[in-house]
Picture 1: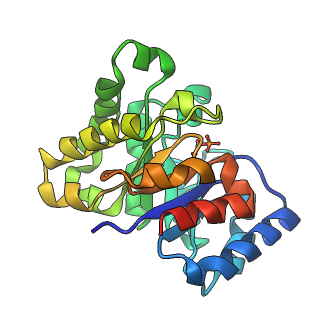
Picture 2: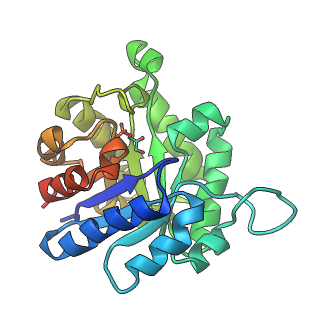
Length: 249
Ligand code: 13P
């Protein structure tokens, strides 16, 4: 039985005061939550959030990472730096990074490798655009995105990874994939792993992301292959984020 994981992706939002208030609410609610909970915050707030979370079971993650461990890469942040600051997860290959910053499958794979080498868990994001869905390419696109990473890090590494299926057309749009639409893709992802390693496939947590709200979370999380959520907008509102966590209980 896979334990549900609810992960907040704050994206480029936050502020010292607002973070503090949001974290207070989440930390005080942790005892009532059965799921694992993670917050992925902007780089400048990692230190603040790490201090606030110390001793709690709320996990800390980053939203991006360099594929290099160190060196002359102005403006980049390495995986060992994130690990030292207390991160245990890093989002890799978010569709916003793929679409807006030109990250391709090979770079995403290299970043996953860097995260694993630093002892953290990649949260590998995959998902199709609306045009790809309408062309009937959803499963092929997702399989290709996964294959690039499997080829680079090996299937066994996925025992220390999380996959997030985030259809691009559902992110920030209010257009959630229906539970059935999402489950079809989640089941296909698990089949892809099952063909390579049945134990890894069975243990792999596959999160759904894209306009998850308190109103739709429970039905999504009830699907057999949906093991939690990667939450954007609703992760910034304490009541909404906590309601989503409760839906995973
Ligand atoms: P929204 O929940 O705002 O649609 O964002 C989803 C997402 O991209 C999480 O990584």
